[in-house]
Amino acid sequence: MNREFLVSGNNSHRPDLKILHTSDIHLCPELWPSPAGIALAALVNGALREEVDLFLIAGDLFESNRVPQRIIDVAIAEFRRLSIPVIILPGNHDSYDAPSIYRRIDITAHAPNVRVLTDAEGEMLSFPELGLILWGNPIVDHHPGFRPLASIPSRQGDYWHIALAHGAHSMRLGIDSSPILAEEIANCGWDYIALGHEHRFRDVSNGQVVACYSGSPTDNIALTEDNSASAILIELKSPGNVVFRTIYMSATLGVADQKGPWVEQD
Image 1 (cartoon, rainbow, N blue to C red):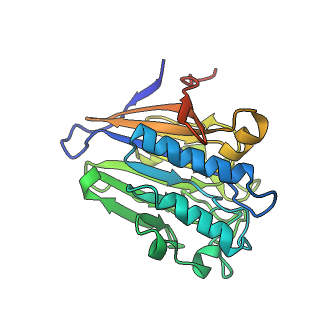
Image 2: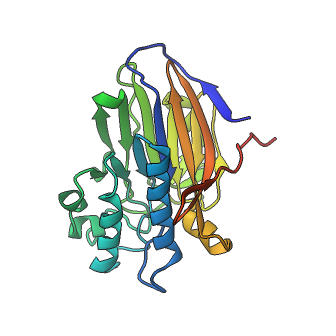
């Protein structure tokens, strides 16, 4: 059956929501049209078909900060097909450093539904109409001293709380760059942590906090013959249930098939 959790709270501020979570698309100019371009189109088609309320990209939308303008324009054109909020977290490949692609081009100016999280101390967004608070800390410098969830704030009222983070799930510090610790997930008290950096689906939920790596849809397209991309579809159900499953999407057909649901591995 679907992974389902009952999290804290019982409040009318939490409407039912559907959210698409992806990461590690790695748009780049090589071999264009590339698997990454096909993947992004598939993800947008899937979001439209599933009628999701929010579109999350947990890092590495772009392969590097040197991606040319024509590739940025492809991303903007795809995002403009959506009327819902699109939230982008800079990852280690498209980090928010001095030459960042997100400093070079204001994507929101061209696609007003897009928000890029750029505050190096962590940035919180509020969506009252969705009963949702969202937070993320972009990567500026990918090194072991940067901990994406270290400064996650406490819950702000009885709304849905979702965080984005890009980095390596780690058991202890000093090994990986941008480490995300199991106890940081368990202790944050948020409803869902949308993770990026690992290119395969992985459930790292801890305690009552649901946390998953979406995996790379681009990798999936490169390994299949039907041009399908994978992502996670999260359903937040009032008063406090979190359900997720992977979905596979065709670049031409929208949601091509629903594989899963994922079950917890021993």
